[in-house]
Length: 339
Image 1 (cartoon, rainbow, N blue to C red):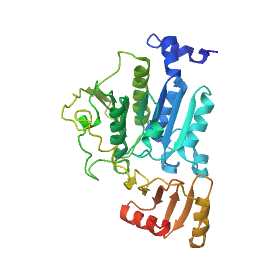
Image 2: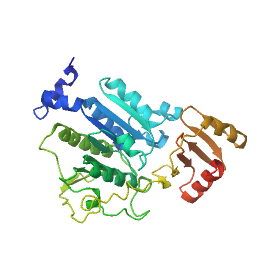
Image 3: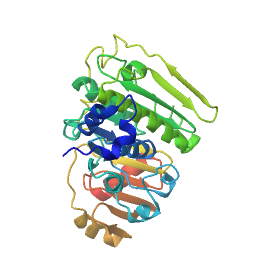
Image 4: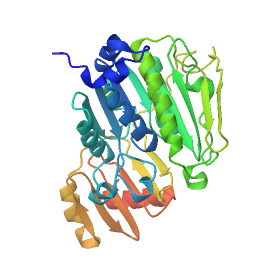
């Protein structure tokens, strides 16, 4: 039996109506990343009645997250439960009509087909450029719209990418910038109204796309809340774009490669092994127990080793806290996990 009563205030909006709401309830959306930007987008989407939401995030809540990631609290930080799981639990309590699927994973070339299968739209909540290029490849190849968003300091940007209609991410940024060439939240900080606003912009455009509105905003929207500026720049499709112009999907095809990255504002490095595996964390806990403090909560293992903290997930991913030196982090990972 149809139950639209809870959405009556948004159904009343002339641009949506009952048919628009039904389309939202029938839609499947993938949210990649559930930190500051992803949290803001997730809350809005679930309360709006997006029918099926898959949340993929590999991280756990930390104290430095709490000022801007509104889905998490101090208790979640202490429990060390993955963000995707916490988000799904909390969001389900706000709208039981929405099916929410948490995926505790890093989106990678070898799992994106499984995780994104059947979705109608992808929303960017990540702060990882490599992941954004991967999303762009998959969405262009499969003709699935996606919405790019980014935040730093009190500024942010957003762009709708509709394959075959608009420019794609590589039309805007043909190649990934050199390591260390972009500002990060470690150097620039983040004020929490910025991800709230960019997340809202992402969701309003997602709603327009899902219901088939002709009001979808194209181009790159830039905001600076500190300076109180708001602008949109037209971005033309590049016929020579490697992705949408030539059909080359280099990031999607980079399979079986190790990834490591320094985590923004965390004094930590994340390491992802070349092949996704399934580790027996209880067995690893027993092996590491004589070497230092080790704990396992059913979701992840934590071990204090050589003045650093190893946080290990069942799929082989790890976060090494206490350093931003990727070489040092990889060395510790390889020594203790035999890789």
